Length: 211
Image (tube, rainbow, N blue to C red; front, side):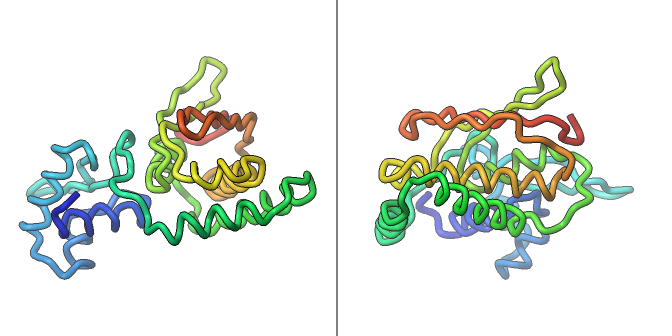
């Protein structure tokens, strides 16, 4: 993503983890709304963002933007951050008691990512958040009423290679923390890690609103 403005827009949407209007993005970046709209349309044409119509009683249609569900992160973080993540993962012994501690920390982090409740469509919001975190999820509603998210990318793969039990424990806790905010009564039925190079981890949830 060589165009700086588009890179900034993509990064901002990833940080927000939700739908944002053209006006909101333009105001936050200090850019003209028409120009921002053009850049967003280019990102949409490239399959990086998706567009949805926002409620509007009258006048011109208003659109909201978010990271596309199948968009893989463009570019990797600076090497120093990846190295630090691997070192930290290696420094934590994968003993059950330590993994549980890491999972509790992950749960706290998940709650911090989504601080506000009252979300009408928890499945959609869960998908958006996982997308913003770089997991490229696909959701499937099962006949038993549960929803399964299949993750098409592992943004933590380098750290997973150092210590899968700890990193996947953190991710499991993060997932539970997201559910605590989205739907406190929801149950994480199953969390199945896979090979990080192939992705495909499964998150099986029961009781999400908006299914």
